[in-house]
Image 1: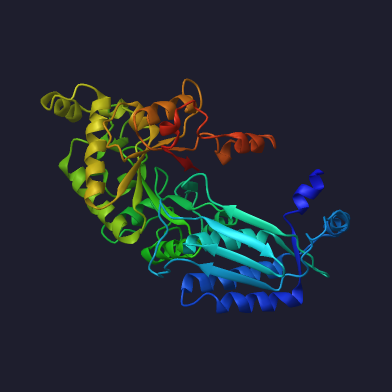
Image 2: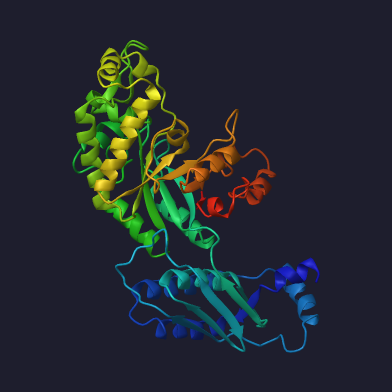
Length: 436
């Protein structure tokens, strides 16, 4: 088959006047499931916007001339949706949701079936991409049985270094839906700013945000993003990166950061892992985050922790000596283990950046290791192999940093990157949850 025909075999044309019938059928088959009702309304609008170019019309004429007998089914007039499972408007997408769906084109009816609302959402997205509006309508017999290779397919958005308005966040979530991605990794805070408005510690954003009124996300904002994503079958996973990347915290709470004046006058370093008040503060903050976010996972960070400030802080050196902590990697391990325990007590599962694993921190087997480095002596294939050999679930990001784009050819590398291309056995490869 010629390449043109391969592409066109996935295209559908339907007359504009037929869309009303499709929309009516959708509404009648959605029952009392509000999330599906909303999806039908959303996709009907998308279908109305799908236009067809003259170039495609010319290609279609050639394509239709080569159709095999019986493959042309005529006009699409109806979409039947069968949800073979429960629909609760209190459900949130999770790591283990079922996104499998079946989409069949037979005669003038398209049939979509899934055992979950999340599978129906993915099927509606496929359906919307198979349709074009034109002056006439033809369709080709086709069947799709679709399910994801990876459970975790996400995008990380950093709203600390650059504040992103809600409107743009919604547009990004729309793009995730169009690409059947299912995780919005929200890197909420960092050195540069603290835009999350904490009810427990409002001073964090009051003094740590770029602007405490304009460039912040209050609880209502966060809940709106979570709901917007839920309607599209997308998880919202928060990241509170510590013990490094916390300079913005020091604007209001310098007492929990490491005094680094020996290195640089007046400087503050990472969180001080030797102070009881550090852990009390973090537990209270994570408790608030747990109350706002619905996902089972929290990203605890742990990357790029420079030990220089710890090494030059007399109180920390004394603490290590009196508590039999011999290396700064061991001190980091001490900190991370306490934070993971705190997260677990709040019913959070934990994700950490790869440095935590590479530095030898003892991690529970259900802690996910997030691999991001692929430069110098760091090779992601080697790190992924080490992580999975240690029976830890893994995520990969090293291949897909959008800020590393240099030429159009970078996109080919994105497509060719396979997270399981590290030579592991089947058991190890099954520990790869996906990436972002």
